[in-house]
Image (cartoon, one colour):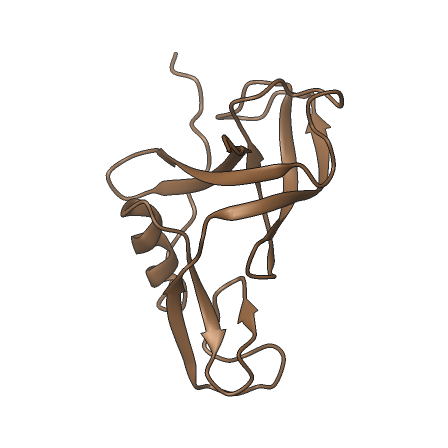
Length: 136
């Protein structure tokens, strides 16, 4: 019997640009045209000032590790142990993600460590932005 697959996110009209960007190998965020605040998750209005005048831009893909937990229990689509993390993007917003390409141990996962985005293609529709230790 096949092992259950990882759950797939569903794009909405408000998030479609984010998922299209991930498929293209870009981390896309939104920025308010009124107050210049970058934000995540995607939404049609600025969470800081409420303006509906927002733009989509390609983020740098650079981040720092803000917080994490190492999950040790089996979950469909994941091989334990794996890190569930909150990263702070260079542009300011924080996002939840997974850390890859490094040991999933407290010794390897230092808070404030420099990270960079990488993308994992799950299928023709879904590509996930994940983060790994920065190479530079």
